[in-house]
Length: 103
Image (tube, rainbow, N blue to C red; front, side, top):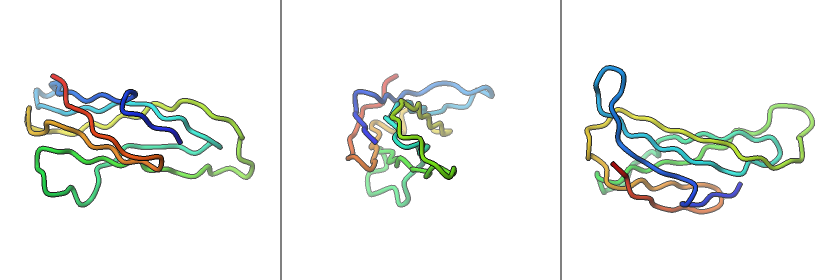
C-alpha cells in the first residue's frame, strides 16, 4: 500500500441536521485485493487539537488473490465542533504524515 499526504485532505462542513462535521478523504494504492478503511486511532494522544487516524487493512477474503494494484478512495467523517482539530495525523503501513484541516 502506498500513501502520500498529497493524496489526502481534511475540512469542516455542516451535516444534514446542521451539526458540524470534520471530513477526511484520500486515496491509497491497494494491492492483491485488500480493502482499506480510515478509522480513529485509539488512544488519541496528548494533543487534543490533533485528530489521529489509522488506515485499517482488511485482507482479501477470496481464495485466489487478484495480483493487481488499483486506487482505492477512503473517507472518514465525525461530528466535531468546528475548529476543534487543526491537524489530522494519518498512519498507515507505508508510513505516516500530518495534514492541516482546511475550512
